[in-house]
Image 1 (cartoon, rainbow, N blue to C red):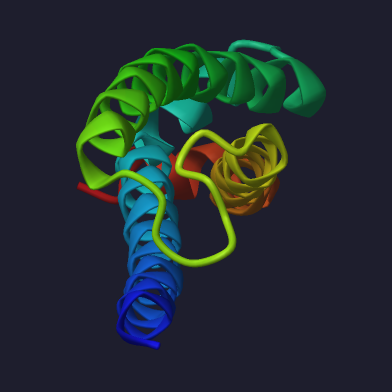
Image 2: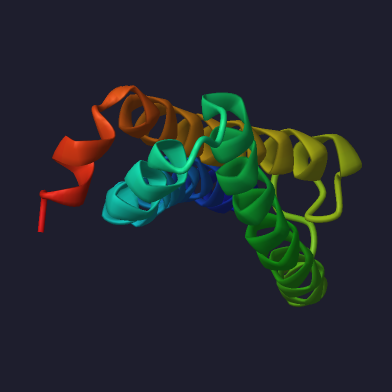
Length: 131
């Protein structure tokens, strides 16, 4: 009974941590793209297509995300060795790791797409005068 209770608490804390990480990732990524609104305005003013500009930001985000996921996976597997088996899910459960990674990829891509698309729709002169 005690091990199951501890495992349940670890599960609750893990879900809360995942939510906080997703919100933080969204906020950081969206803020980073929004800060480069002037650059987007310059690119659009010089004739770049909106899809090219958006794809450039998505590629940049995916590269950073790949590095972060690689480090996070190494960290999760390392910590998983020390935690052992608590509850019903193994710390090395490939389905859980894949789902969490997929969730973070989706959050990061959405956080990049929304502000980048919004910035490409703004008049380039307005974006250039913003600062």
